[in-house]
Every structure is written in structure tokens, then in C-alpha cells.
Image 1: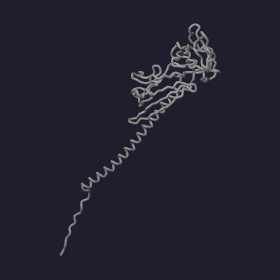
Image 2: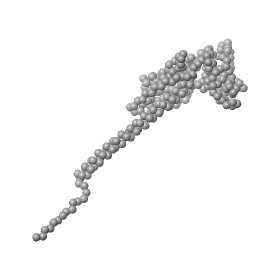
Image 3: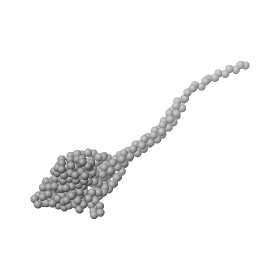
Image 4: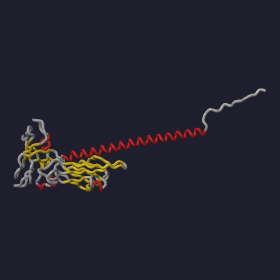
Amino acid sequence: MKSSFSFRKRGLGFTLIELVITIVVVGVVFLGISSFLQLGVQSYVDTADRQRLQTQAQFVMEKMSRELRHAVPNSFQVNLDEIVGGEIGSCLQFTPIHYAGFYLGFPLADATQMNIAMMQTVVSGATPAWETDLNEGNRNLVINPTRVEDLTDPTANQFVSITGVISGSVNTTNNSGIVSFPAPASGATPFTSESVAQRFYIYQDSAQYCLTLSNRLFRMEGAVLSQVAENIDGSLSAAHQAFVVDSPSLTRGALVHLNFNFFNDDEVSNFRHDVQVINVP
């Protein structure tokens, strides 16, 4: 008896259940990978933001330190709730030095001239920059400033307004010359007191660093207002503690305390820095 067998070839491919399971497994794997990658990217972004915040803080502290360290002594004053660019801010006022040196002989009564020697070096034979600047006017010369008013109040008799440099008086070898200024009241001396070290400082306008409610730090000198940094807590409680000035003592000059809270989203970094003013009256 002859037997016959029939074979049916199984169809190639995947069933619907296999496809669904595969898709679910692959999705779970990719979800884990994407979460890991997102975590890595977010960590990089956070690190970059933190580094940017640190860099900005270092820049601000270094910039302010350089200016404050070399400012006119006893020219510091904290002004709370100032109007800066149309908004409220707390400000640290100081007076930048344009030139400094030593006077050669204290001006007596009715004097209108003063022999000075600058600390800056010049090329022998060349016209020094300070001679050109002082001939333009708008510069003041102060001796022995012990308070802010000594640089702003004419009745304090501690500063004079320079009108120019006497022609032919400049000696480029020792960087000296004779400056002129208006005559004081009859019989009066141009300066109430003199410096023990015979120092003088030449300045123009005072300047201010101001922290505002918009969380920005500005520098203001005269009519020029420029932004220095942002993302610094400018709330009234923080701004009122941002600038603190300790008066000079017998053993040191003035000490300026800077206290800023830099922030980035929810992260806040506090930076404190003390600046020693090196100039003395």
C-alpha cells in the first residue's frame, strides 16, 4: 500500500505579539539611554553655568579691587537707596586718582602756584601726559583728605581747582613742574592742613559702583553709566549689605568689604572680598 505525505512550509516573519514585545523592549532600552544622555548633558550645562558664574564673580571682584585699592584715601562713602538709571540701588562711592606725587614746598597765604613732582615716569625730553591733561582744566588737587567733604566742599580748604601748568616749568628729568590755581581769600592759605608725607592727589569726578533692584551691578562716573555684571541679588536686604567701609586706623588704610550673592536659577553663590586701600593722606 502506497502512502503519501504532504508538507506545508511555515510562513517566514514575526507575529504581531513578537513585534509588540520587540517594540516595547527597544523603547525601554532607548528610554534608559536617553535619560542617561539627558543627565550627562544637563550635568555639562550646569557645570558650564557654574563656571560662568565663577568667572563673572572673579572678574567683578578683581575689577573693583584694582580701582578701590588705588582710590583717593578717605573718599569712600556708602549711599543707600540711590536712583541709578531710573531704578533704586545701593552704591559705593569713591574718587579715582588721575595723578599723584609729592609737593615741593607747602603753599603759604595768598599762594596761586605749587611746585609738584609726579610719581609717573616719563621719557626725558618728551612732553608728559600730565602736563597736557592739567592744561585742559577740570582737575582738582587735594592735600591731606580726611573725609569725603575735603574733596567736594570748597569751604573745607583742602583742594584747589588746577587752572594749568606754568609754561616752561616742567622738568622731565625729575618729572616735576609748577601748577597754578585761583587765589584763596585774602590772607588765607589754599590748604587748611598739610600732608605729613607731602603727598597730593589729582582727581576729577567721583565714581560709584551700584547694585540695583534689577540684580545688575553698574559703574557710574559723571554722566557715564555702564553695566559691569548681572545676576547679583539686588534686593534691598542684600544690597544694603553689599558694601561696608571700615574707616582707616593708625596701622592701616580704609578697608572695603564686598559681599555679593551671585545666582543662576535656584543656585546661589556668596562671594566675600576685602579690599585694603593702600593710599594714605
